[in-house]
Image 1 (cartoon, rainbow, N blue to C red):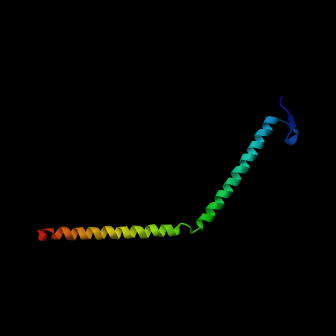
Image 2 (cartoon, helix red, strand yellow; image 1 turned 180 degrees about the horizontal axis):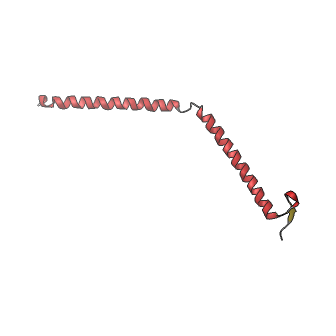
Image 3 (tube, rainbow, N blue to C red; image 1 turned 120 degrees about the vertical axis):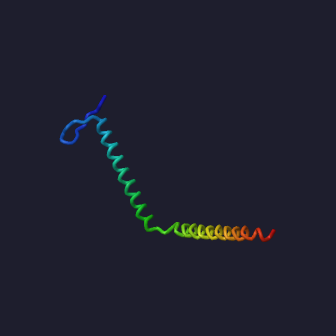
Length: 87
């Protein structure tokens, strides 16, 4: 059995349509709250410097790696050019 209740404008609504309206209101509220939290976190993260030290360490490490590879390549080239003089 479906119960009828008075809705907006004095119209009768079934319990099922009220349930759908309730569901819509709850989902809209959850969506609004979730969106606001996400926007708030993105605003905070934009002005946050956490992780910058790690990025600096990565850049310095890559620079040192490139220097080490260049040094090994230079030493290898020098040894190969003088290899004929050693024999």
